[in-house]
Every structure is written in C-alpha cells, then in structure tokens.
Length: 273
Ligand SMILES: C[S@@+](CC[C@H](N)C(=O)[O-])C[C@H]1O[C@@H](n2cnc3c(N)ncnc32)[C@H](O)[C@@H]1O
Image 1 (tube, helix red, strand yellow):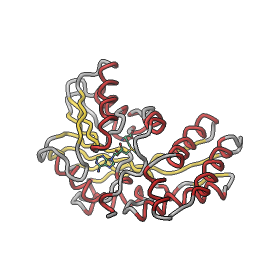
Image 2: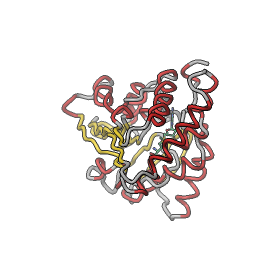
Image 3: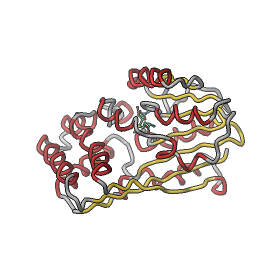
Image 4: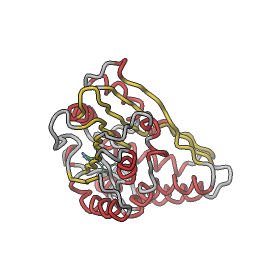
C-alpha cells in the first residue's frame, strides 16, 4: 500500500462527526473573524460535517461559501447539505474534491480556509499551494492546525501514552505529520507567501471541566475504537488489540479524574496572497 493510497486516518464514523459538528467560527476560526466581509466568497477545504462552513456562510450574507471534502466523505457532505437546508442557510454548497488538486480555477475565492486538515494530508505543501492558487490576489489563506506533539496532560498515564504513540506511528507510516501545527508557517513561506504576509497566532484546546474532558477524550477514543487508523495499525503490525483496549480504558479513566487536565496548541496562519 503506497502512502498516497492510505485513507484519512480518522474516518467518517457517526461519533466523530457528531463531535466535529459542534465546531463553530467562534470556537474554531476566531482568528479569521475580523477579516470577514459580508460580500466575500469563501472556500472551506476539508469541510467535514460542515458546521464551520455553514457558520461562515451566515457571516457573509451577500457572499457565498463552498465546502469541499474527499470522495470518501460524500455521505458526510449530503448530511451537511441537509443541515444547511434545515437551518435555512442558502448561500452555501458542498462538493467532492481533493485538497491536493482543488477543482477550481485560479483566483476564485476571497478567502480559502481549512480547519484541522493540513495534519491529515500526505502532502501539506501541495495543499497549501493549491489553497494559494485558488485565492484571489489580495485574498487570504487561513488554516488552523493541531500540533499533537504539544499535548501535556496530568495525571500522566502509561495507557494514554501508548495510545498516542500508536497514532504517531501510523501518521509517520502514512506520511502525515503528528506535529503539523508548528510547521505551518514554514510551509506557507515555502509555497511562496512572504513572511511579512504570514500572520501567526495560537489557540489551545484546554480540557478541565468534566464536559471538556469528555469531549476531548471522546475524540481520542472514537479513533481507537473504530477508524482507518486502527485498521492500518493492526494490519501493519504497528499495534496490538491490547494496546487499543488499554488506550481506551486509560482515556476513560482520565475523563473521570477530577484533577485531569490537558492542554495542547493549535497554530493559526492567516496569509495574504
Ligand atoms: C479533522 S477533519 C476536519 C473537518 C472540518 N474542517 C472541521 O473542523 O470540522 C479533516 C477533514 O479533512 C478531510 N480530508 C482529508 N484529506 C483530504 C483531501 N485530500 N482532500 C479533501 N479533504 C480531505 C477529511 O475527510 C475530513 O473531513
């Protein structure tokens, strides 16, 4: 199996999509808010269940937002379309397309946005170059990207450490970058943005309340329970069933620990074309 052919490792399971579906512009793209104007056209690359995409559309009432995701996300895009219809948001559409070969002409959008996608593609430079290509001169490319290497958590847990090591092994094996967040400013420069035109900010995922711990741990355990990541790890001998079982149990134990805290960094880049 070549690296290119390995699937998006999180997959399109209902439980994961439900968690992603809680994302909004306020909680996931706040760094972009002040740059939005009512008439803008926006492309949301790797839009998933589309809750951010639909929220972006509400913020550009005279503009238009397009969400794009892979062929394997076709049913997810159908659900996103249905949600937009239920919510009465008409200036949004969803279509299948590859972030590494975006199906749009050069200079098509005022803003090209991606939330938590650069960490999941095999060629983040190509994705950023594509985002730059379809943005209009003077427009913006905006990405928020998790850096899994920044996660600190207490109490320390051997089981969680083991589970995280599996994720890192599968990501390495499949040509993804576990620490993608920290490299995004460099990648932006490498695809042609001038450093003076790259604004870098950060925002954390902080989990302390029971609800926050539950949300964060659920993200992790859903992938350990059933996902392309698990299939690849078992098939390639990168982990055992026991590693997964211990990892799930350890995350669940952490969720119920009233001193449990985790903090990790997202890196945001706002690049002027
Ligand atoms: C972690 S999810 C983020 C979804 C959404 N942006 C959000 O934050 O709720 C990553 C998304 O990227 C999509 N994706 C992965 N590789 C892709 C590619 N090559 N082209 C387009 N989308 C891709 C996945 O299908 C998935 O929906």
